[in-house]
Length: 288
Image 1 (cartoon, helix red, strand yellow):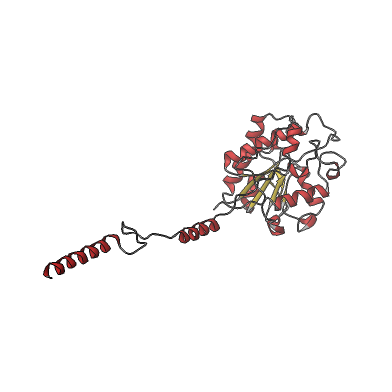
Image 2 (image 1 turned 90 degrees about the horizontal axis):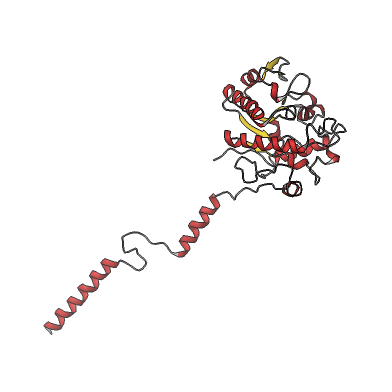
């Protein structure tokens, strides 16, 4: 009997030791806490919910470039290219200063911005245009107070929160890549120096029509080449690029005829309304 009792006690001791070593069912033998498959699913779901879905790149003009290889295509893999966004609304447009040559001066003439013809959002030369090649020391007519100032002076005086640069159509006919890029880079540098907190977005030059009287000196072959230079400048400067060219170009590689004035150069009211819609639906968002 004593022998049986001793064996029984030894057996109980072994079971107790085993329980301490391995812990209760489901415990981690290393001392940590295990998770069930359900816990793993919950964690994964929470992680996915916190991550924004990848932005969709707007490739609407991709087939145009395939069918017209003489045009320089957009690099749809560029990190500078603004993707499709939710419509940012009129408030977004109201926050933009358009530093532009004549195609975007028509935003003022058509009264397409919130204050109509009296808008202070359109910055250009006293005659409604300016040329990239001659911007150093060039005086724009400051729409806020009517004083003629250089671009650096106007930027320093008003420090606009958001500048959309749309220049290049005047000059692209005689500027090679090095000349074009140098003058454009100088413009970017002047804005950054005088207003470091201003958001700068570079916009493509818009397409034109063969009806333009200087067609040949400037064509959409010329323009798409220049747009590729602008996109590279955006990449090199950590800026964003707005491919508004794509919302106006037709299947033939030129601006759609219903969207251009008779001069073949300037987008008409319908065309500019499309561009404003494109700007709202490809909105700039600060990176997280």
